[in-house]
Image 1 (cartoon, helix red, strand yellow):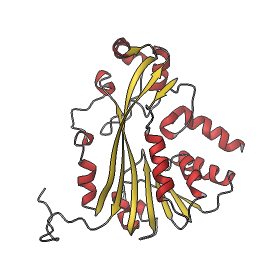
Image 2 (cartoon, one colour; image 1 turned 120 degrees about the vertical axis):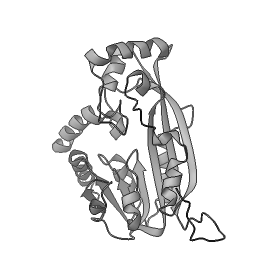
Image 3 (cartoon, helix red, strand yellow; image 1 turned 90 degrees about the vertical axis):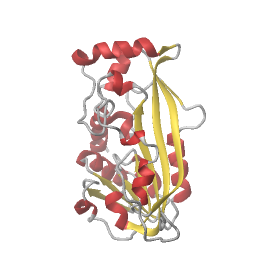
Image 4 (cartoon, helix red, strand yellow; image 1 turned 120 degrees about the horizontal axis):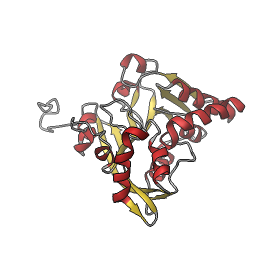
Length: 277
């Protein structure tokens, strides 16, 4: 499908592997040392996605995961706020003859956009490097599961490039998502944190990689991708300290959560009691 091919080429330039595209600026080597987050999310999906499941892919992007899972489940819904990414997902599903997928354009932070989805319908929600499920809690069945992968950035990279906001990151508290979701009656099944390495040939290769708009990103701030004139000195300093025999090393951090929907009791003696926060 020529239209999909052209759209994929344009999206790959903007989003790269953040949206699961393979590009010329990808790392030359990814070292997960036998246990990587991509494989873990796929494993969890294969376990929780059943033939009778209705699945919500929250932040579905260009639909690679959606199309892989669609053939295993009763229905799958893709939700994304980027119209181009969502269109790519729709075209990909059409190209593969997938008939049980629906697509919804909307902002995951707005309950009014979430209201486009049916109530108490979904058995499983996936957020792969995507948004939180807060606005969608009413769309989950009483015993639904949530699989969520958080992109935690790169170790030390934002600081050296001056992208680290003075505001404390939510990720600095390792329990923040568990605490937040407990108010939604989502209880953790498992939490797994990954540190893995990616390597780049040389300084120009790394500069091209960081020029993608989703790479030098700190969530409270607007996107600020690499700019040669402004950031070259910071890049040279980073390379000075992180050159290895395998190439220039970036340490990646990811977290993968599984939650189940259940009644969360803060004080079993009185289940109605909630903490005073």
